[in-house]
Length: 394
Image 1 (cartoon, rainbow, N blue to C red):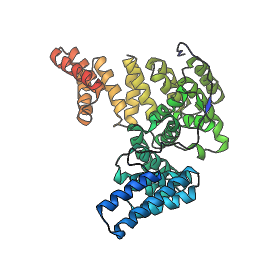
Image 2 (image 1 turned 45 degrees about the vertical axis):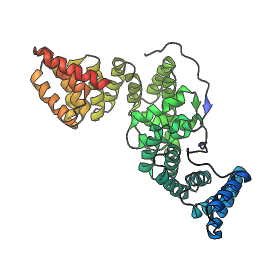
Image 3 (image 1 turned 30 degrees about the vertical axis):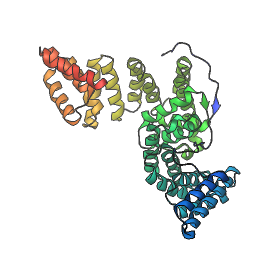
Image 4 (image 1 turned 90 degrees about the horizontal axis):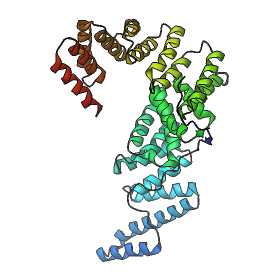
């Protein structure tokens, strides 16, 4: 049982609905008061006396002002119509595209919103709010690969730093990561919610699905299958919130209630693994016993045994994993390090060199090679490999 100090009770909050994207992208402002328009017109008159050149600018200013007024009053249909007219007159008006896309998103007009954000991102490449909103729209239209790309880039550029918006962005990103099999990355997104005691049934369901390595979206889970995933999500949420003793109790109750459920032990093992790999061994071994044909189960068990310095136990698990999937790097690393530590330097060296040929930045492979060199008296080579490990950690 893994127990963290200073555990506190959970006071849940509720997952918020649509995001409140800041109404700015750092570009030019929307024309506002009459005095500002007057100044613009005076400058234009000084530049040219042509009535033909004045009319489009006057018309744009009028429509832009009316669009901002309709937006402020919450009249979305009129605001959308007016922003569309303004963009017809001035297609390089970046802030207008932003408001147009935001209003269309708020109206559930997702394809039109995507088009507006496409225009904006041509003018302002990489603008985080636009990427985030386009990603959310793409999610709603079923363009999941595009949505994942946009939301990941938006988060990397700081779109999730705004507290009001982080919930909805991370929740959708977590679902997309699980969909492509990046389960641990998905679980990591849910850490945000546990840290802030944000609670919601669909959120817990999503966490349970990611933890139990199910690629389906929460909305697609049949009603009869929801209880186990919701309960697993609750236990995982409790662990992520730092209440590890309570989480241990919840997981053990789940093991009794669902003794043959695949990936339930894996979920708890993966949570434990990030804190103490030796504590995860028992859970991964239980998963292997349940589904012995799953090579990933053997691989993670071999790897955790290797990290726990139980090299002789790791070898047969790594061999079982490699028999089913010879190219699995985790199994290769567990095998190479265990061979090096148990005195089979020649086999270890061959495997390590193969790994480094495919992945020169593998810290674990460099560490295994350092072990081989140290055992065979090649001190300078061992020092070089340890230095490479330290450089890769920076």
